[in-house]
Image 1 (cartoon, rainbow, N blue to C red):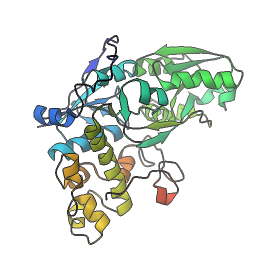
Image 2 (cartoon, rainbow, N blue to C red; image 1 turned 90 degrees about the horizontal axis):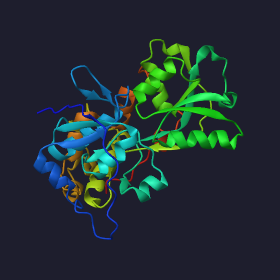
Image 3 (cartoon, rainbow, N blue to C red; image 1 turned 180 degrees about the horizontal axis):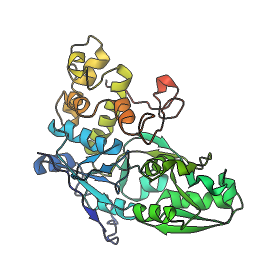
Image 4 (cartoon, one colour; image 1 turned 120 degrees about the horizontal axis):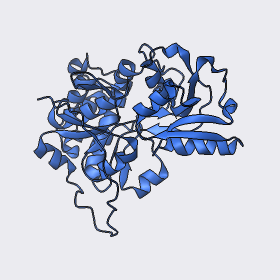
Length: 345
């Protein structure tokens, strides 16, 4: 069974959270609901190369899509029992809070307000990013400080919009925002000359540029003007579900560190290394504690690979997006980065 469905929705915002201290009705129930339903409802963004791309046959792929597939593999032993929900940034949190999605996996920045005031639980970080600016190569603009008085295309309902205002204010500069909640409309506006620059997370800019008619005609400016820790999100109130999503991510990171890949995972199950044995469930009871099979990480790694395999497949230096890991925060902690996971113990 392979459920790959594009559902682009405009979700009405208006239902406020109940002002009480009672435990939410969905608390501790998400895993059971997913198992009974027979599929995971996973929210991604509007189609974007590298992170959540949509093929003509309706198949989703990308770095964030593989997190959805990994969680499905952990629960069902099958990575394809996923229904993908694609909504705009402006309504993504409402769709999650309304239980239309079981989890969100769509380059979403972890911030204090989002983590404490929206009823959300940021599980961990799977990509460290920062906001930048994309401009036409023939514009003569060489620095973000050259954008004083410019028109800037920016996605509304995002931290990007807030960071943009902060950056210009801090540098005593002015700008005119050109906003839209649909990234596809915004990109077309930029390509049509409707703004001088387009701002977003640098990974998003690189992803979008890779699909332009002539990517070489657009350049990323050197400045990084914010911190954008990105990762999967669930609703608050269901610690067991948050733990499962979190430890699936930790599992693929540990797999890379330990040298466990999609190609060698079967033979690694016989490893004498206790760290590998616990990761793959031949020793210990970590899977049972999460409500899934003891060998859930075997299914996950077979389906999507380890963190490094996922990264290089979708956004790495050899892809059209071309974001190298070496020398960046997204390298493993053993290689100078900060991709680090607690041990399976």
